[in-house]
Length: 97
Image (cartoon, rainbow, N blue to C red; front, side, top):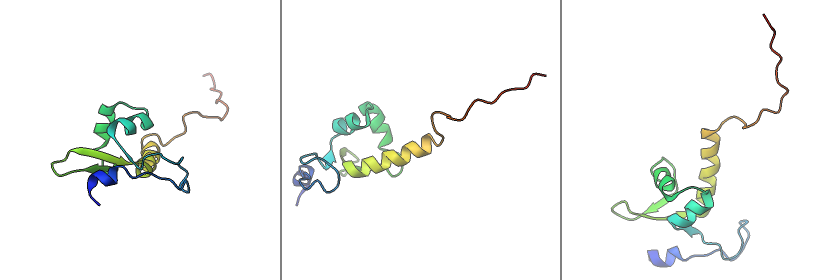
């Protein structure tokens, strides 16, 4: 199987939680839409360790594996935002001095 055939592989089983017909390999534009970021941000992320980009020789960005991207995003969000956004505990009262 050569690369063009690989890029058109689609999931039709649904056992992995995806809807039938969703692409397994995403373009830059599709991945940016999925992540709700610009393509420029996605390009920056593509050079971070562990980012699931598929490149051809010469370093040109080709595709991103969808499930690997979703796992990477989950880990990335935990590393960059390790604390909960909102503190649900009651506010502390400060003593006046």
